[in-house]
Structures are given as C-alpha cells and as structure tokens.
Image (tube, rainbow, N blue to C red):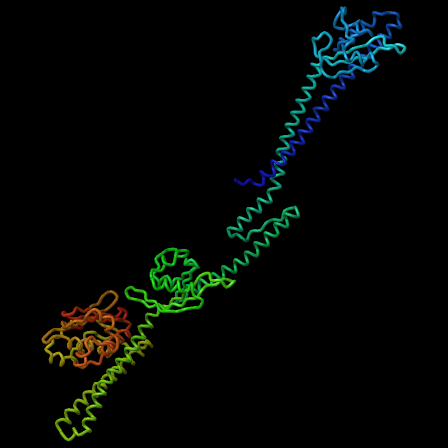
Amino acid sequence: MAKKRLLWQFYPAYLAIALAVLAVLGWYAARTVETALLDSAGQRMLAAAQAVDRAIGASIQEGSTDNWSVAVRELARTGGLRITVIEPTGDVVFDSERESTEAENLGDRGDVRAALAGELGLNTTPRLGTGGDKTSLLLSRAVQRNGTVVAVVRVALPWAPVQQVLNRAQRAIALVALLLAAAAAIACLIVSRRASRPFEEMRGVAERFARGELGHRLQAPASEEMAGLAGALNEMARQLEDRLGTIVQQSNEQQAVLASMVEGVLAVDSEERVITLNKAAAELVGNTLTDPLGRKFHEVVRNLDLRRFAARVLVGERPIDDDVILHGDPDRVLQVRGAALRDSAGQSIGAVLVLSDVTHFRRLENIRRDFVANVSHELKTPITSIKGFVETLLDGALENPDDAQRFLRIVATQADRLNAIIEDLLSLSKIEQSERAADLAVEDVRLADVLVAVVHDCESNAQERRIAVRVSCGDEIVARINSPLLEQAVSNLLDNAIKYSEHAGEVYIAVEQGRTELIISVSDQGCGIDAEHLPRLFERFYRVDRARSRKLGGTGLGLAIVKHIVQAHQGHVTVDSTPGEGSTFRIHLPISRVSSVPRPAA
C-alpha cells in the first residue's frame, strides 16, 4: 500500500471539519433567513388584517358600509396583497381581486375556522390561495364587536415575491459558503503544511544523517514536543558522528596496519565469504578479482590445500598452523596460521588466516642443511684418505720407500685439497661480508686487461687440453670494478669451461655493452648441463656429476664464489646450457659501473 505524506493526512481531516462546520452554519443561516422572511410576511399580513379591522370599524362608526371596501382595495393594491372579508357563516362578502363574491364560501378552510374560534389563523406554508390561481401565504383574523365575531379578514400574500427574496438570500448564503469553503481549504492547507513542515524537515535531516551528513543540525521548532524531538535527533547525530569518527579512525588504522604488513591477512565469515583481504594476501594467493570482498572463498583462493585449511579452522576450537605449497612457477611455501573469529558472546562467526611466504627461509634451511652435509662430506673425504694413509705408513709402509713416497704424495694431495676448500670458504666469507657491508673497493679498470690476465692464468690448463680460448672485448670498455675479484670470477668460469670441454675444443669470452648493463659471457662446447640442475648450480658444494668434479679437482665452491662476487658488484649471473652442445655463463654488471674511454693510440 502506497504511503501518504503527512500533509495529505492532516489536510483532509482539517478540511472535512471545516466543511462540516460551514455546512452546519450554512444550513442554520438558510433556516434563519427563511424563518425571518416568513415572520416578516406574517407581520405584514397581520398589519394588513388589523388595518382592515380598523377600516371596517371606522365605516361602521360613520354609518357607511361601503367606505371600508374602497380603503381595503387600496390597501391590498399598494401592499400587493389579496384581502378577503368573510362572514361568520363562511360566505365571502369582499374580495380585493373580485367584484362578485356570490356563491363563494370559505368556512371550511382551516385558517378561517381558527379565526372564527378566536385564534389567529396563520398558515405560512405556501398553498393555493382564494380562487386557486396563485400560491400564497394565508392569515385569517376575526373582526369582533362587543365580543362577537362579526367577520373574518383573510389576507393572502403571494409566495412568488417571498420566494424570490428567499432564493436570493439562499444564493447569497451559498456564495458566501463557497467563498468561506475556499478560504477554509486554503487555510487548512496552510495549517496542515505548517503542522507537517517540522516532520518533513526532520525527515530530510534524518535522510541526511542516513547518508552520513552528520554535521547538519535541526532548528528547534516552536512547540515543546517538536523541540524535544529535534534536540534528541541532534544529540543522536552528535553521538553518531563521534562514534563513526572513532570507527573510521580505527578502520583507517587497521587498514594501514594490514596494508603495511608483509604477512597476508585473510578473514572469512561462517559461510566462507571473504570479509578481509589485504594486499599481501591477495598477492600471495594470486587473487585477480577487482572486488573480492563478499565472494566465496573458493572464488578468491584456487588452492585446494588452503581451502581445506580454512575449513579446518572454521570447525576447530583452537588455533592451528601448517605449511601449504602454492604450485606455480616457481612453487611457493606458505606458513599459515588460523584462528576462529568470535563475537562478543563467544560464538564463532568466521575465521582469520595469517599467511607468511617462507619459501626463502625454507630454501635457506635446505641450503644450510645441504651445505652442512656437503661440507662435511667434502672435508671427510680427504681427511679419511689422509688418516688411512698415515695409519698405513705407521703400520710399516715406511719400511718400503716406494710405497711411502706414493702414500705421502697422496696425503699431500689430499692436504692441498683441504687447503683449497678452506681457502675457498674463507674467500667466500670475505666476499659475503663485503657484499653485506656494500664497501667493496672499486676503481675504473679497462676490461680487456682483466680478461687478458685471466686467459694468461689459465693458459697452461688450456694448452694441456689443447683448448683454444677466444676473447672478444673492445679496448674502449672500462668498468668500475674490483679487479682482483672480477678476475677471480671470470677465471673460475674459464677454468670450468676448460675442464668440461672436449679435447681440442674452443672456449669463447665475449663482452657486450647494452643500454643498461654490460655482459661478460664464457661459452664452451662441452657436455652441457641438464635443465633440472640449473636453479641450484650456484649453491655451495652442489655438483652435477660428483665423481667427475672431484676427479677434475674442483672444490664445489667455484660457482658460488662467482655468484657472490658479481652480487657484490650489484650484478647477477645467468646460465644457458644444452646437454651435448655446451654451456654459456654470463656475468651481468649494471651500466652505472661501466664507462667508456677513448681507444689508446696505436
């Protein structure tokens, strides 16, 4: 059902009351006017009857019976009346509108009988008068002499003039009533509008409050009740403004905290609809929805293990935590902690999940574990060999000079291997310290000179395996580097390339200068490396082929040293390899560490 405005509820009621009062007043005025006209007509007819009575009496005193008829006819003519004189027997002896009155008897008329009985026979109800030709008002009055009725005077007043006056009066009353009704309608509208305006103003202000415009205030109306209501609304708005301000401030602080957190925060209600999702959580779960709030958990999070974890939190009583793997490229490990959300009554209304990307830490743990295992294994092998041969010598092998010398040479070789491992570890530690402190000593060095020194250091190994080393580097390229460290990094790459290349092969060293970086690449034509080993190739003691690496004399730390030297120069290392075709290792240095100088004169 359609709702009506308060104005249109007030206005019909006020207007109905006003019109009812006007109708009663109009009816009363019409009745009053009609009564007044009839009373006036009665008085007029009575005065005429009395005048006829006097005229008849005067004629009797003068001894003439005809004079009164002339006077009465004149009276009837000037007064617009019809006057009839009737004997006590009912016979008409005079009629102002007729000359002959023979055979006419009105003794059976009620007003005549009343007059003969000594009463005033007044009939103000319009009826046919004497002769039946006009509708008239009638009045009959007895003419008495010495207490005896000698005649009855009957006066008839035509109804038409009276009716015209009455109609005019009624029309005037109706017109006045209409004018008053119109005025009443306008007045009722004004009064209704004034009565409803405070409510409409309060409604408008309440709507503004609902839209959040709580700074507006109501003016106090004149009435005490409305003023109290306006004051209550203003106080409510003030309290709401204070509380909303507090809530908004707390919400902003909460959002700021959530946005600045590295950990992801994800909350769902009891129906598994997302109610909170900070930026970190959206990035961790790979959310692509523009507005994820209010969406089902499985629409936002595609990982089945994480959805199962959330379901466990919703039905559980205690906080739980677990690791969840997000499969992708690469895979990520999330440490998830979950707890139930509860309302003020302690009832569960949802769950909150805190997501932490621990992929790097897990990887570091694996690297640390592998490092401990590898370094233990790498150190144990030469130590075991040294211990075994020393025990053999002590058991009597010293008596045989040839065996003693061979065993001692093996012990010396293993001791050199231990020394190489320890030196590489110390070198790696030193490089890492420089990398963390960012205090690497650098200077502008011509890169071609560094590469020439590297080739010279590895020349004997290359000649032994008949490997040709080709270098391509412009003489004008100058890099801001630590020359000994970069020389060590390139030397490690070149040494590996020579070791793993086929006899009589070729190794290429090339330098490319781009817009943002300088690239030093070392390419060989050796056995190559499977793709599965490439991500871990620069880990400490990681070997693709352990037996061959040890046979070739490597410590397992060369590529790790290369990586950290390049990182200390704010660069990075990449590798491309195809099994059976060879490998290419690239050192990427930022262009800010590279400059050009004019080529020296020949």
